Length: 419
Image (cartoon, rainbow, N blue to C red):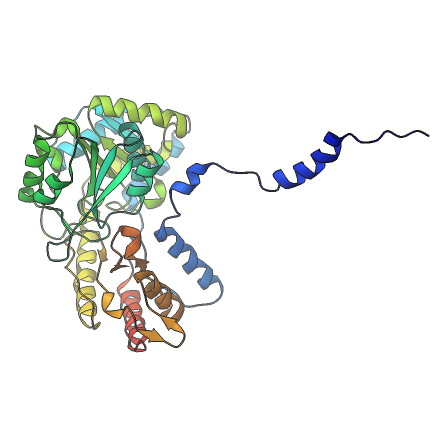
């Protein structure tokens, strides 16, 4: 029986296929950003807990309260009424009306439904806005410390991040002078949060007015104002930079239900912006996720239009915890901080511990200290490097008072071992 001799191509292909398809390249897009440190620490905490370790979680970025009953009842009613079909991409019309109602009631801001886009969490709202505004090479100013995802989204849009470092002495808030020095002809967007995650900084009306006066000089710059922690405020009523009429068309207000209504898992956020930006965000969202969950939207109508009594009760408890946490931080040698005026974190400078050792472990960075604390004290925190402040760590008090007391006792004991 005669057999044919394989051609060079036939000899080559199996070798090529075995090599290439075992190492198929993925998009270089993935190289522009890293997994958020907040999620990595949560993942590590779950892993250690599954191994039997008694992990006290002080890295939490969500309220430890359950969603209020009247909101859950609204969701159950929506299920029973068969709100189970696709909804308009930008949200139910009556939900967008509810957002407008809330903005007027709580912030004295006038918006129309065509200026509202409802999304799958405030994170998607921010992503929509950044991708709608930022082009390749555009500069985006972000004061540090900042929420971990801001810079990653700018990189996804192929923009350039210009960080402006704030200080403990100034309450972790950017000044008008710093802002003006950072703006140039390439600046496209300014991103910030008030109350701030991770620092807890809250901008007063006077401070926002000073920033607004700078923005008035530079009409090519838009502002993204992340106000997701609006209700968790320990110093008075919330102030939005959108209140300045001359600036309002350039502001994208981002908010949602996760923090103020203990609805993190419901995944519902929204923007209020110019009709032009809202339309652009709707167009983008139509290709990514379309509309957010129909049941969450119906529940959100009730959340936004009902009494805020349950929210304020939650904030009372956060206030109690904050006051105790500051006492506990004061008892930790070498921790420098500014008291948070909002959100549910304290963000101390821990650089005094750099160079200290315990056994084979040397603390060189805030990340080292966080890993030391989780493995030695079994307490999870988050490195300040994730937020652009490498000398700090973020400690959450979105946990029970019992766990807060327990966690700080373990932290103190672990720090005492470092020499």
